[in-house]
Length: 264
Image 1 (tube, helix red, strand yellow):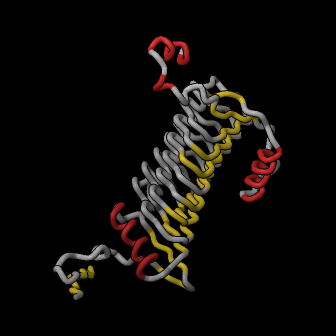
Image 2 (cartoon, helix red, strand yellow):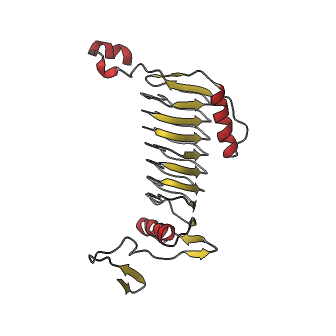
């Protein structure tokens, strides 16, 4: 059953409960299967509802969002293949828990962009805050500028590419996946990493616990060149490779006195 209340459509299911798209503002302009809407005056909730209405109810797979205004938690939970373009900057926790979309952000992003990303491609044209790609499981996250601290913390898969510098504790507790840092990296790179690979072209302030230089292979060269070619990043610089030393693999089985020797 559908009830019209002013300019807002309210849809109820058989139990009399409002359905998910009840508050969709429907401000999009749709032309030739592509949608554009201005988010300047919309709340986070209404922006996300508009996106879901377009993607899931209208079948639109190419959406441009104008003036996102650095609002928090935008574009989260998108679980379908589509193209999204945010013309502006996002706040904290943007584009989290996504699976499949190709997303471009023309501005900057705050903390925790692409947290728990499962697949897809996200391109940030400028800088990102701390915790970019936290617990990421798959896909590619490209930040063309600098990133803050703890990039790829608890990363479980996928690839993070940073065109500039990265902050402290980059790759902290990394479990799987790859990171490509084209600039310098702060202290404690790869601290307590369990697996995965980190490539750094610039200077490393210090290595974290159990992070050690790795042996370069032809597969590393092919991987770097392929990613640079895909994203039109030019000629790759010379990278250093860092991996897990696996000293802490059996850390819980050590005696207290042995743990001190491993850590210090």
